[in-house]
Length: 328
Ligand SMILES: Cc1cc2nc3c(=O)[nH]c(=O)nc-3n(C[C@H](O)[C@H](O)[C@H](O)COP(=O)(O)OP(=O)(O)OC[C@H]3O[C@@H](n4cnc5c(N)ncnc54)[C@H](O)[C@@H]3O)c2cc1C
Ligand SMILES: *[C@@H]1O[C@H](CO)[C@@H](O)[C@H](O)[C@H]1NC(C)=O
Image (tube, rainbow, N blue to C red; front, side, top):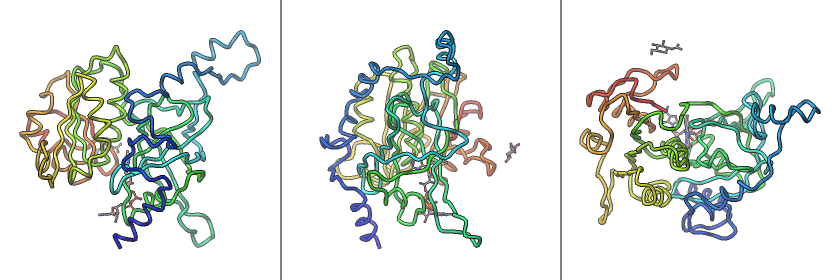
C-alpha cells in the first residue's frame, strides 16, 4: 500500500525535484530559495488596477484607499484557481502554486487560511457531495497572480489525495479568507511559536509578515517539532531566514534523530519551552499549531466549537495565561 501511495505521489509530480529549492529552471518554485524573492521586487513595478463602480475619475483616489487593488478571493463564493506548478518538499509533503489574474493579489490579512473543496461522489438525490478542508497559504499575501499551499499528503486523506491527483492546468475550488489572528506590526515585543509538522504554515505566514517589514522589531522564537529530520518542512528556507534576520531564532526537535542530528530529541519538553520561548509576560504571545496530540501536550486543544478552549499542558504549567497563547 505504501508503494502505491508513493507511486501516486510521484505520478502527481510531473517535474522531478531533489527538493523544492533545488532551483529547477522550469519550476515556479525555483525562486523560492531567495528569501524575499525576485517576485517581490518585480511586483513593486506592476501597474495597479482598481475596482471602482463610478465612472467618475475624480473618485479614483478615494476608491483606491477604500478598496485597494483587486483581490482574487471572495469570502462568499467558491472560485476556481488553476494549478500552475507543484513540487515535492519531503517524502509526504508537496508545494502547490495556484495562479490567478496577475494584476490582482490574493486578498488576505495575516494570519488567515482558505477553504478548499473537492467533489466526492453524489448524494441520494444526485447532488454533488464535497469534502471541504482549510489550508494556510505560505506565499506573500501581497504577491500578484499566485498563492502557494504546502500540504502533507495522507495515504487515506480525502482532500490531500485530491491535491496529490491534481496536474498543472487542473483547477481547485477555493473560498475565503478566514481570518484567524489579526497580526499588526509590533503588537508584541516577542512572539514564541510552537509548530508540529504542517503546523508550520501559519507560523511561516506570520514570520514572513514580520521579517519583510523593516519597521517591525518583533523578536521571533520558533520551536519546530517533527518525526524525523527528513520530515522537517521548508528547513532550508527557514534556516536562510534565520541566518539573515537576527530577530528570528529556530530550534528543531525530532522524535527519530539521525546520527548527525544537532537539534533536540523527542517531543517539545518543558525544558525546551523554558529555554526557547519568551517567558510569560504581557509583551509575549505564544502561537501553537500542530496535530491534536501535540496540542494536548503543549496547550490543550481548541474547544469543539473552535473557540480557543482552556489553556492546559506545558504552557499552563510554565505560567502562561490564556491571553498570552493563541491556538491556530
Ligand atoms: C486552520 C487550519 C489550517 C490548516 N492548514 C494546513 C496546511 O497549510 N497544510 C496542511 O497540510 N494541512 C493544513 N491543515 C489540515 C487540513 O485542513 C486537513 O485536515 C488535512 O490536509 C487532512 O485532510 P484530508 O482530507 O487529506 O485527510 P482526512 O481524510 O481528514 O484524514 C487525515 C488522516 O487522518 C486519518 N484520520 C481521519 N480521521 C481520523 C480520526 N478521527 N482519528 C484518527 N485519524 C483520523 C486519516 O486516515 C488520514 O490518514 C489545516 C487545518 C486547519 C484547521
Ligand atoms: C465554546 O465552548 C466553550 C467551552 O468549551 C464555551 O465556554 C464558549 O462559550 C463556547 N463559545 C461559543 C461561541 O459557543
